[in-house]
Length: 246
Image 1 (cartoon, rainbow, N blue to C red):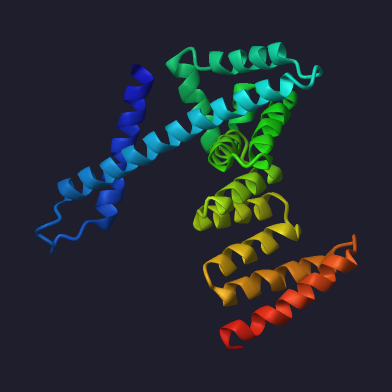
Image 2 (spheres, helix red, strand yellow):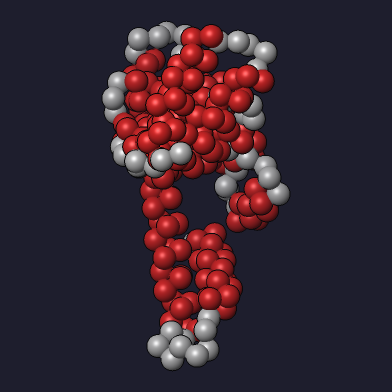
């Protein structure tokens, strides 16, 4: 398929560029061609994994929504199907797909480019959250990975991905997700607290203390005071600081 061919050519060009940056002429065992082939294999594997996770995540979201619809008559599965079909129709030609990829690089989201409406995204989020709430963490992780790929601007999507990854002990993925949540909603307290939990799970008490301190500072700046949370943060800070020798 032409679109797949274009994607492979782009991947090969990227691999060549990265290989040139890493190339060391004095190392006879690592020629430019060897470096390029290695990077191309790694990029191909990453792309395949991402495509698989996106596909599995979308499927998990839809199946969860179908389950919800059996208990909630207000969910319009026909409207969901119609909007999803419209989104997929945007890939009818290679030119359309290439144009969307260009716009994606300019900062547009797939949600916007595919024409997925807010009702569809809310339903898919409900599906992903239901998977997490019922303890289906691998499916929830895939579902939230799909959602963050489709719309990277949503705070709750990144939090969901962070929670699911944390429960699967994918701590670095959870940290990245919580950091993105903080980017989406600056001034929020919770991403810092969740990142502190991640660092504690890695026994990195100094970084955990830094995150808790950041959460405490955000809470102090917040107009909505939560005395219970403030007290809990102070207690955690008092406990955390001695653990790394400061």
